[in-house]
Amino acid sequence: MMLSIRYRHISPPASLDEKIEELLLPLGEHCRVDQAEVLIEHRAEKSPPYIAKVRVAVPGPDVDVEISDHTPENAYRRAVTEIDRRLQRRLLSRTRQRIRGRKHAQNFRIGRRSR
Image 1: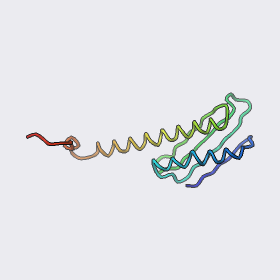
Image 2: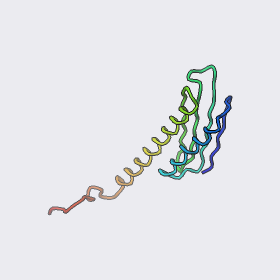
Image 3: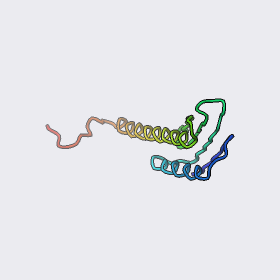
Image 4: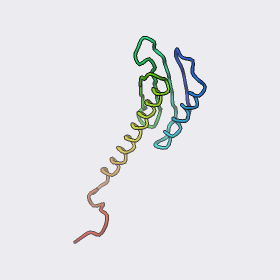
């Protein structure tokens, strides 16, 4: 996975980069993640002032999330949680489609069939 981290109008603490990597790596368990782009921005005129934009390139449509919060860590954590939720929902949806797409899906029963 290629990871790109950018900051705007903020001097990032050293621990923030480690937290970003720590939270993004488990996303690869659900599906293949080719690229991830993270932008953390401080906008003084808005409330809440910190915005985290995360874009994850996966097979199929890419997943984009933009979340704002009062601290950069919380904004980023909420954005990654939302991406994780969307990827899990996509995986579950594809599994359901595979089961529904089977020919004669009602014949796939568990146990003995009565005659």
